[in-house]
Length: 269
Ligand code: I24
Ligand code: DGL
Image (tube, rainbow, N blue to C red; front, side):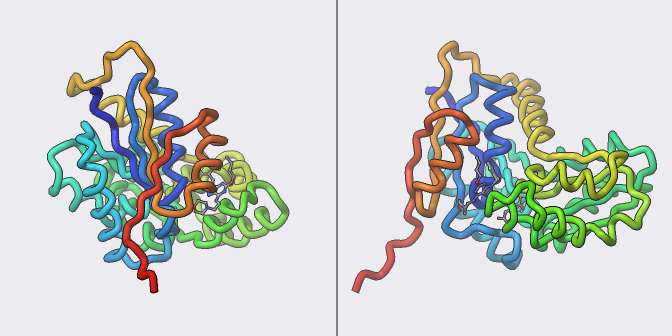
């Protein structure tokens, strides 16, 4: 049996990483956990996001993955280091790959980061970017109205444009040349964000960069899948399975094998 790559997220957002891994590494078997019952993580306290992430890691570890990918920016921001110290396989988050790409692209060293409240409050992007180059200037901004917009499927309406324009107003005054989309959902607003910020601003999306990082680690450790048949992926979600399945199948363009997970058995009176 092939050892899978385990990928987790608060909900469906991490499917952006799944799609990119499927494209770049079609032989790799993926197991994915979306914590849809408790999404969104963005507005939650760090302690709670940390606890939820640990629970999911413990769940996925029983499938003996060769690597763990925290495909949620908010979870990466608060739990990556701790999870790394708890497991013996490589753990990849979505923050460092995005930060590295931004650091490589910026000319001025002034980098903007937008994300959920939890991600921005943690300062994780700022820390990663300063570590890569101490002269980087980082301008961070939480955009709590973006995830609800995307979850409504509202990618390109007038309301979306107005919300993006209002939210990014303070960033527009600054001299940044690179903007990190530090949330799984924001790439869906990339056209609008680009229009509001101006065409000269380079947008960095973490999902693609993370998939490249996964490839590099597997290659360096000589752990790439070598089987000839295509793998069968496995999906788990904690919430109502119908909606998850329909979004995942639409997004990935194939049928998925989905197991609903019940965290706690509710009290039945
Ligand atoms: N897209 C849709 N519906 C959503 C969404 C999305 N959330 C993120 N993205 N949510 O429709 C509906 C409610 N959620 C609540 C939490 O549990 C799951 C259901 C558009 C689907 C088009 C395929 C954007 C999105 C996406 C695909 C992959 C990842 C992702 F469209 F974040
Ligand atoms: N997946 C989350 C992130 O990348 C966004 C959705 C949420 O708030 O749970 O930060």
